[in-house]
Image (tube, rainbow, N blue to C red):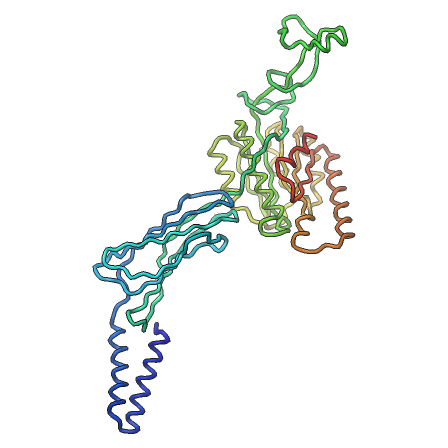
Length: 416
């Protein structure tokens, strides 16, 4: 590709030759021919040698809001010097350059290596790809340039943030084979109080409730809730309506944070966690435990995008054969635009599941991007409260999650 400088030089050379011919001035003609010859000689000079590029990332995956350190090593593996090179590393536009530059001008000798180092901030979750590397070379006199791409790519996964959850107040009615940290609504060995019953011969004296004996005159003992491992099911609503709000604050983003935090909390307690994401279709990750399941859940949540309008009842009907008997079910949804919510929750509660609905308030997220008249806001707020009250009437524990409330504080509403 010719640069502007080369085009002006060629135009000047031709003009001088024509003017010299018109006025019979050999000096102008010779000067014009020199300009053209100089361009011709420069066009024969090749651009650059064989380049090898290696990109190194500080991590293959990280959490939203973390910093990513990138190093790009460029090596001239040929036996001749390159021309002036401009190297630009293409980074995802969702990431923000925090320090350094992803651009460099360099002229490399044979076997010489240079490095580009910069730091990116990752404000959004998702699956991202770096590359290709854009290269533009200019010859010595900046008369010709050429652009090319080296298809060197690197992938990275940005997980949603994981918040600390102190207590989720979730119980199951059905024990599994091994003991764990989840309390069951059946008497047995455990730490949490279940009920009082009369003393029978053989009961250990340490479980006698002496206060109850002093009050009633009847020997009573404390029953505890049995501790055991259970399956916990997380249902995340990623329908198109969950995009309401800003890029960083909307029901879907907050829902992914909640799902990741709850999964981390229950997996640390040695419970098994299953994840179902519904948008225009249902994506299901079977229940399992351990660090492998944790990263599977985070990777699945990283790629969630708002789309579709799948009703909740269709989700619960499809998952009904997969639900463990009496297992807790978390539904993370704004409950907007879905008339099947009440029926779905009634069916879950009727099968013996403990249902917790964590509902980010889409009305309040909408106020972040648009002005809603106060009267309209109050009416929509009242309609939402009526909807949540109706859902609670079918046996679910409902949490109205406001944008300015931390997840751990919102989960305390279940306890209250």
